[in-house]
Image (tube, rainbow, N blue to C red; front, side):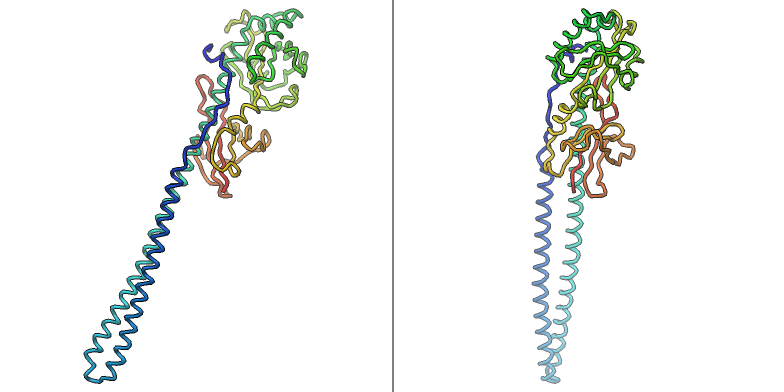
Length: 359
């Protein structure tokens, strides 16, 4: 665990690969359009020639009729020339029709290949985004389990007298100064009362009770000091409604993993700033028409590159029992997604990375 504990999370950006597939698709489409135009031009030229042949054949028939019996043989030739002209015209029309059909099928096939390639690339970028947050949150699980064994925190939980509380609060201040990704750290007793806090925090929470919160109730049931609670992203009223992801570990006697539970340590990860850095760091081309999202297991938006709908919007994804994939929604927008893979001992919370590219 200790190898990851001294790390401070840094935003890491991902960049979409060069759009080579789109360039090739555009080139093929252009060349196919040029072939179509050439076919149309050439068949028109053939039709003009055959029209001239038919006109010559018609004139020859008129002249042969004037010549009477002596022009009968010439009339046969004229009829044959006229028939050849009609055959050539028919072949030219069939050529134009079939060539246009085949090039149309080629364009459609190239477009499908391009859409699939784009969709798969968006899946990869969705995976990158969720992997980045998983690695970041893995460190949070390490931090909370480590700090729950800190002697100052253990002493404060064991005997929350003024001296122990002050010492623990000063210790929390040192930690917060070094780990700027946290908004606050709260040691709590087993009844859910916050018994310590860095004294320079503008919002005082010592004496507040958090026993009603889901994360505290789950922390009371932890089996050992090696276990942790990863709370849902929420607005925390005691921190000015800041968006936080709360992680908890049990404080145990002697700081031992198998010790008797004597309290709970809750650490509040500054979710909004860190998550925003990740989703805005994914480069997907036209940012005005694209949203990069992190959503929780209920498909609630918990981070958005455009800053919209956070903790209030739920999106619709055609998961179809898959952990990753892409599809087009009813507006024609491309929707790509990938489920959390977890990282090391952090299994993830069923979240998804999602990219929506507008039509």
